Image (cartoon, rainbow, N blue to C red; front, side, top):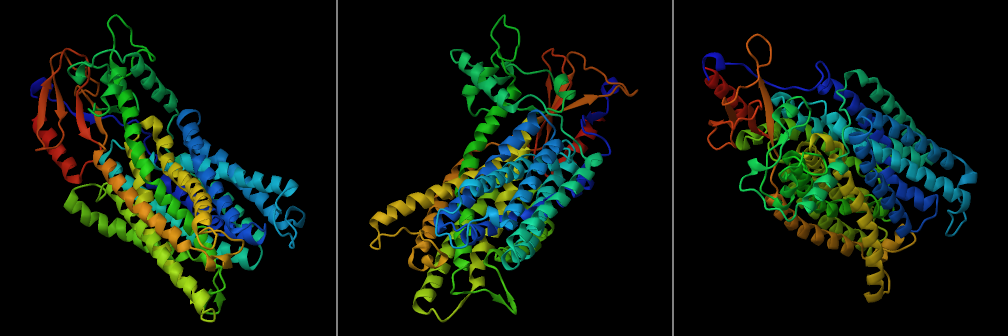
Length: 625
């Protein structure tokens, strides 16, 4: 454009100036580090607490832990929903944080009080009456607190980076890697220091340190309030989804227009003044487009018509579902490392010594955690820059590619676990006087740790970046929901496989049943591991299909023109609208408006390489000249 048309183009930035960035996320990283000390320590050691203190049998101990963890991650949906709809993410984290600390205090009191624990000579069914009430109250209060925090915290951290700023958007992947690194550092301290204290000194001291570390984490987190960018809760994401479904059903008899431009959409000025982003139309799931058909002589109202952007939000959530489902089996494999692998380490054949120290079996995960503590920075500062030069992708590889790598490694981990169990059982039954090092178990933990590094971060970044602005807490909760379903599925697998194999095996015993860890010497835990390995491999091919079908979100970033005197100029009718088409050659094409009083827009892929950003800046200069 020339003459009076030559104006500066500014991208709207709805965020608070001077807030956010890595300065704000340092407080979040501190919380994750302190909170993970206690949470992860309990994840790996509670099964031993259930066996030795509460006198549960093997199956009950494993299922109690997986049900608890499943509930904790399931309740992340509650935290995500509340922080998207009613209260901001900071307040959500603090409220659920108080519940988490309170639960750890109750657990500590019960572990300390002899009146609230079963008698040492109790044979079975020892947890009942007052003991059961205190135990299950504290356990599921802990699930509510930790789950609610996880539902809001990742999205709060990601909110500190403005997705409309190329530099900050590029830093988002680094944030999620740092988030995992914070969890790994805290977990490493938890599974060594806290677990050692709990196993070798007293269980109540371990729980007390967990409660204290978690409380310190939330105090530090609260001190960061002046630095956070806070997302204002909006309309219920569930209500927006229901509206689209209801209106699409109402309009099912209407014919779709020939072009998507005839579908109803809000004006560009609305998106310019809002933190919401305008989402480009896609041709997948066209049946939902009927919700955007505005019948003649009908005024636009929420339950009569939905905007194209609102319909695309529902399409995004729908396309995410198969990806989410494909990760459940991997988390079922994770549950075995926190239950049966710990019980393997507690068998008498396993040599737990490390020099002059006795190494508790629940502390074995410290090996992959230390490995990951070095591997995550190597991935961020070496692999990503190298891969970026080849793929021109800001994260080196896409989020779905990263998840795929993790799924393959989880299958390998279960295959290796089966082989290690064959060796352990052979040594225990044929050569009981020849101890086997506990660190043989580190192979399955190490491989799965790398798998988790790829998948967990990939899912968090994927669900956050692809989700609409008003659904980001709920969407990132899908990562934890996958963990939840994985733990529940583990309980189902254990129960069903024991019942089936009890009927068909010559010994009339289930693959993974028993009262004490030594019963594993006469079971078929290796077959259970290999069953999960085969299932994981089949699941990977299922994932490949849906990952190739998935279409990444494309946002239309609204820009406005200034009149040279600092004021905003409304575009006159007939002035060209500039659109940056999906990158094939990088050319900007002009399309004339159809008389609508909307500001110019750019069609911009959400994920853009650094080269693309520089190309766009040079092209804008050519247009202005």
